[in-house]
Each structure stands twice: as C-alpha cells, then as structure tokens.
Length: 266
Image: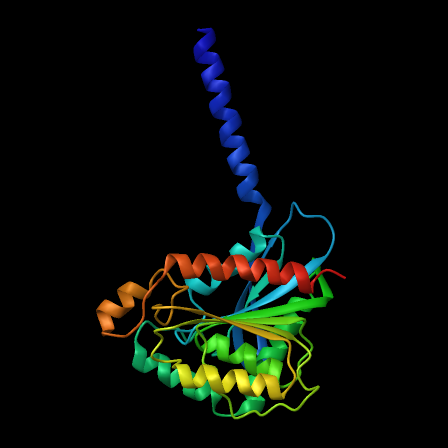
C-alpha cells in the first residue's frame, strides 16, 4: 500500500509539474490592420520570466503564416524572448502549393512601400506587448522571410539585428555606408539552387561596401529550406530542390541564440 501511494503521489507531482511548465508558455492570436487590410499574427512568450525582455519578429516562408512560423515563435519564447510571428500576406493567405505561394509572394513584394508598411505594423504590435522592451527588437526570417528581414535592414529600420535562414540575398536596394544599423547574420546552404554562390558573393560585396556588421555561414551540400522539418515532404510532393538538414538547422539556431545574447546585452 505504501509503495502504491508513493507511486501515485509521484505521478500526480509529475503531472502537476508538466502542467505548470506547459502553462508558462503563453500564446495569442493577434488581428491587426494595415491600410485597411486585416492581418493575423501569433504572439508567444513565457509568463514565468519576470520583467520586460527583447522581442523578435518571425517572418514566414513563401507559404505564408503557417504552423512552422508559429513553432519558431514558440521556440523563441522558450528561450526567453517574446516573439511575434507576423503575417506578410494578409486575409489568411497560406498555402502548400508552390504556384500559389509564388503568387502570394509576388503580390506582397510588388510595392516595396507596402512591404515595409506591413513589417512596420507588425513591429509595432510586438513593441506594444506588455512583456517587451521596445528598445530591444530583432527579426528573423525563412526563405521569403529571410529576404524580407534583410531588406528591412537595408532600409535602415530600427532593429538591433536580423537573421536570414536560406533567404534570397539579392535586392534592388543598394545601401550606402551608415544606412544599415542592424547587425546581420545569414545562414545559407552551399547546395541551395535558389541562392547560388554568385548571389552569396554579390551579397558579401554589397554588405562590405555598405560597411555593415554581418556574417555569412554556408553549409556544404545543404539545400534550400534546411530549417524546416517539412521540407523533405515538400520536395517529394512538388519535385522541388529543398530539404531539411538537422545539423545545419541546429547549428543555425545555436548561432542565433548566441547572436541575440550579444546584441541584446547592453
């Protein structure tokens, strides 16, 4: 009887512990408007952390604001940040088909001012959250989102840092010395057909000419979308040159966490 009671008590304690840990992660769906159009983002934070902390914007792949983007926000919350997975497309535009994704991306990037306005509106949502120190803001993006955060840095937006994962590195924006105030990290695949070596080289040259504080990490043999565990299924279904790489994904995340510790330490 005693052993049974001990086992029961231990089981209850474990359940309570697991429940309390789960309760620490808070999430909220946030609707906001930009130029009369509705957008839906996803805020994540840990309510066991005391006081204000840095905020990180998460910009989705070209598929739209999907589960992967929200998962990244939750990972950031677990690491001690408040994260906002924003929506660059609006009206619930999300897909798993490349043709639709390309159309969504083309519409969003057609007017650079519109793109910047959508990003800025999401940044204000993050800055206004009760847990966020609005002087400490970074942004990270994947694929399409990686290109977005790099362009926001090129435009001189008030960001402490940006991180691009397998994002396009080309841009019509040519920053001058002093334009870029954010520190930049880029993670790219050495076998990424969508971000070839000449594009990486041009990016390095442009950043050097702009006198930006940046770094580029290239993983040999790694394909596009290496951060997304669902990339292999996408490759098989749509015959796309993409693929998840566990090692590259983990090393990129670890590097990002070190990067944030550096830029947010004042």
